[in-house]
Image 1 (tube, rainbow over the protein chains, first blue to last red):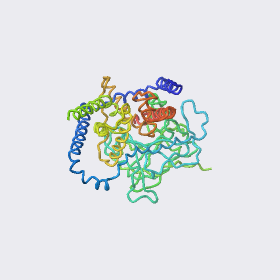
Image 2: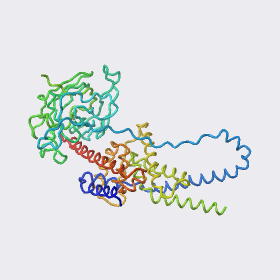
Image 3: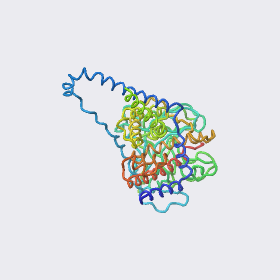
Image 4: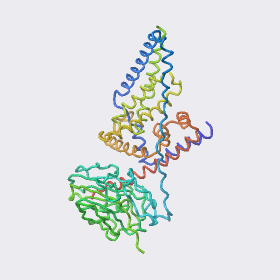
Length: 310
Length: 185
């Protein structure tokens, strides 16, 4: 074993030792993945068929050779060029992780913190084809939707959200988020995005959030702080969790602009820490439809932080 | 005629050995390169049909490298086809264990974990994904990976480091999403 191999082997051992329980579970899940019964036998049969067919073709070729010999010279003149086997095209490179702006020491309870500078308020205009938020001002995350499992929505719950074409457009905007669904009976439907991937986002450089939306119906817009997330899932809340700070806006049938300032965000239920919203410790922006406001048909577009006025 | 027949038998025997030795590996590779469980059997079969057709030109000792490269191509085509047919049913995860027998509860956990793993792999560049799948999921030594991919050892190690970082970051991100999605009110 040479030095490179030795180093690689040490790195592999170290990676295995440092693996978290979650990482180990994901890796184990792949190692246990297996084909359905009979799949291997079917592949074997199909391959043997191909071999037999190839053999048959060869024999036919040999038998026909004498007959075709006279025409062979002429045929060669028109022989097609060999088909080039094209190599696998490289996948589009993934965009490099956005570089977070200056990161001063994080608050004790927020393990990773990205501090916004306040110079790029547009969170998402949905004009790209992907589900990632615009990587501006240190932000990184993806749009997804979840529901309480008691009804049906489109796109379905637990899926990434991609922009949809707005019928007829909205001014210069051609795409937005579109989610619709039937009746839900527990807490309803949420769509949202991380702001700093797995970390916290300090949005205190901004004054709130603005967006365009249409319903009709009530829409809850909020920011989920790490403090209200269950400790079991990496949050800091032990009891009465997920009392996210939200504001309720009544949407009309046509697109309108809505703005919510930090001081308008409230916890809508009793209990659960904390009572005052702190924009320095947010993990997700979320839009939600409460079960009582379903069925629903919701469009959201041009989501942006509100700049602080001097 | 006898020589021809014995050659035929030898080719068939070689192909059988190829399937026996590598079918599970190829099947898992097409899965990890984004082919849903419902299409993975067909994709793996396609890889071996290609191998059968090219058996005579397959260099002895290079079979696994050929199968891996073919699996990547077949998976790529399968993914593109799937994108063109959005009406296809949603991916289902085959929960069948191979060597171990998890409990029903563990099985549910593993099925969910597999979907999360796939999300993370889908976010990796194909070069990183190839070395990660081979090293971490297939437990292939880096020397063999370098040989399979026709790359210098240093390049494999460097890609593997980047892939491991991407994986760890993906797991963290998933944890954060769990925190977001587990809301109860």
